Length: 112
Image (cartoon, rainbow, N blue to C red; front, side, top):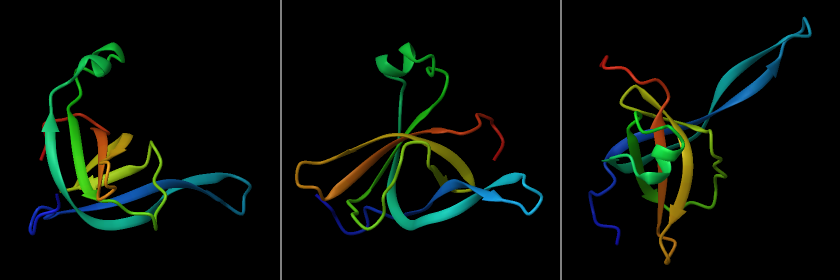
């Protein structure tokens, strides 16, 4: 159930896109897909993440309103509080009111 004030964390969702250069080379640039608000929670590593040897990474859940106007993909990047997270998977509730995004930090570090 969506409650007032539940989605108060600002997140940006970006995608790396290939941009061709006149020299024939290319570069990867970040393209903003969506600016929205979400509820952010942290989870401990589950069995599936341990099997994938991702047990040392912290799992974050980003819960936002269900959207049909933007097509998100695994490997898109979420920027939240100047930290970057790589999207692993999606799930949604039966009423399709909430979209739950599972993501891991792009680079693990203790810097703030």
